[in-house]
Image (tube, rainbow, N blue to C red; front, side):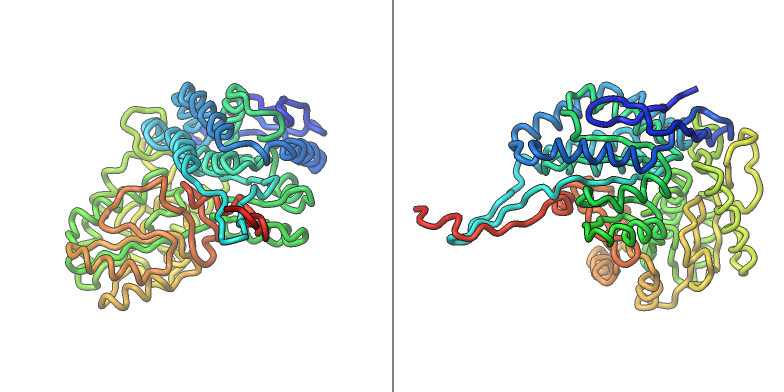
Length: 479
């Protein structure tokens, strides 16, 4: 039984202001796996004060000092990579193979990319007598989610350190074990006191206190669009910057010249990865009306190859939904698809055969003949549910893809690469994948519209953590 009973403030594990705990549930079994202390506004006050004190000196640290610190963190992280994968499986149910192959390595990947970017990043520019400098914004409040927990922690912490900021992290109350381990890594790496602080708690207490705190200069948040709106509204009281990575309902445009068999099979399985709990998942598959039945049959066959079950069992490719509330929501969304007349071709409601009792398991589900105005085509399900939508021509496909409150990601599939490029240019999303392109940790990550603002990953992440100052006359008389 894991006990997360202390916050990490000012370089030490400290007692909470009030001892109140929350049970942490293993989604694979539905049983308690540990408990986490719930912080309050007083805990946030202490953490912010520690971060402010550390910022007084850390803001003036050199590039070389920050590179050395990031490398030390990366070295410690790599020592505990397997342990990180294990706790992620425990806390949110990722299959052990996925945790080892994708979740845990993502933490190291973002640290490595920050090091690479910092080595050549330009923090000032001279324009005649004027010097334009980029300075750390100050104390950053961070709120991270449960679906890719260490990925989202590291992609915020790494650029914050690279730019000279200090921080207070509130990790997900659903999946806090990876944050605990990451904090142990930060401590072992010798991160100076106060640069990094951790306060456990729930959004209504710790998140609200953090986002409204006058000593916090910026909020960096990842979560639902509803949560992002609440953080932004609370942060507006102190006019602080808010960078947000929020929801998505990404469209995958399969053009009429695409290899339907390989594309539909590949991308159906991809939607089920991480049990569909990925904000960039391509959950709206757009295919020509004339090929709807063919696409539905291919997708149903592909979904049948997904093995739902105990995430620690060999052969499992899809674990449980990460927590009970989301489990309930996914079931309701599947039922909505059925009630609104979409054609169920795989999965559906009910408990998957062979999965451990008590866990939050759902069936990999595919709907065909989905209309663009149906709930499953409009709202983010955040579960292993694919909606196949028909279109008449390329222009209609683009219109359907862009007809969304979200704009996080998207994809285009075509044998004609130039055609795919033209369609990608018309999509109103922060990212577009052409013909199954691999991810790129150096590419900016973020979205349009209600998918958020700002960008994470690589050198583009630095901008959110920097203020711009013009020093007029700085170069007067030089040369």
